Image 1 (spheres, rainbow, N blue to C red):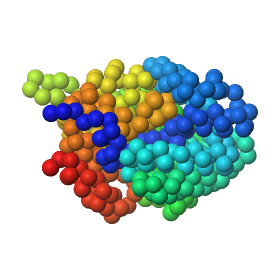
Image 2 (cartoon, helix red, strand yellow):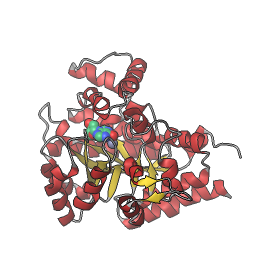
Image 3 (cartoon, rainbow, N blue to C red):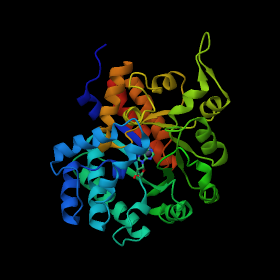
Image 4 (cartoon, rainbow, N blue to C red):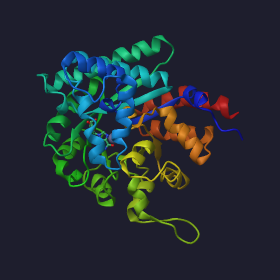
Length: 359
Ligand SMILES: O=c1[nH]cnc2c1ncn2[C@H]1C[C@H](O)[C@@H](CO)O1
Ligand SMILES: [Zn+2]
């Protein structure tokens, strides 16, 4: 069987659940916006800047990886900057063949030049709407849902959770916590998660990336997370066994309850959560039929795209269209938009496209 090529992967519909708005800027846009607000960058050559982000993020440490965001967050402090970045994000994802995306960002990081939390959210939602309309006009329809993230080292999660609920009818579909994981367990934000559950709202939690099973356990059993951001370290609870891998109690629970794992292969290699793409646990987790999904995390810091992540998996694991469809439908089933809308995208967009390729 001939391996599927990159161009073919771009053409198939893809669904993306874990992508950070402030981790996906175009380098040329950063240069332009930084010039306008007087922010000093490591270089003002867009190509060099793109390489700088990937190299700086390639540190083997989540903490050092996160330091690179200072340069993207700095240019996302005005309505115009936020709107533009969101519009370009929608357009870039759509032209990469992503038909459904949930994009997240932390509003509390965008208040340095006087905007309020609601202004920030409204600017981003307007940008997504504009980018999606532009994409549809050139034949690349995309549905974008927004997730609001609270930073786990800070103490604004309740406020951000309320902000998310306030904007639930205009495009915000979920909540998340992100930032350095070690030392900042999910239970620090229990009040926010309990509030969201009372509001019948959806949330995912970055867990099991730079810290292991206790973080995943807390996210699910204490906080009630619908999905796990990364969750890749669930493999620490899976042992080889004689005939087949043996799942511990937590891994079995995650699989039995079909808890979605937002796996981000390239990002995990950069932060040291996985040794290489070929050795990434996604291969095992797919074989064991966990609800595994493929994601970009930060397209700028990883120099990647949704199609590139899938191409890397095709190369490393020999996947064909059947596996790509499986990951895509897993993501769509796990999305935070209403059930009927998820079903419509699966039945009217994803399945017909793959059916042609699989027949
Ligand atoms: O993979 C990640 N783990 C934890 N935090 C992350 C990751 N990628 C991005 N972030 C942080 C940095 C961003 O500024 C923030 C909001 O998008 O989320
Ligand atoms: Zn992330």
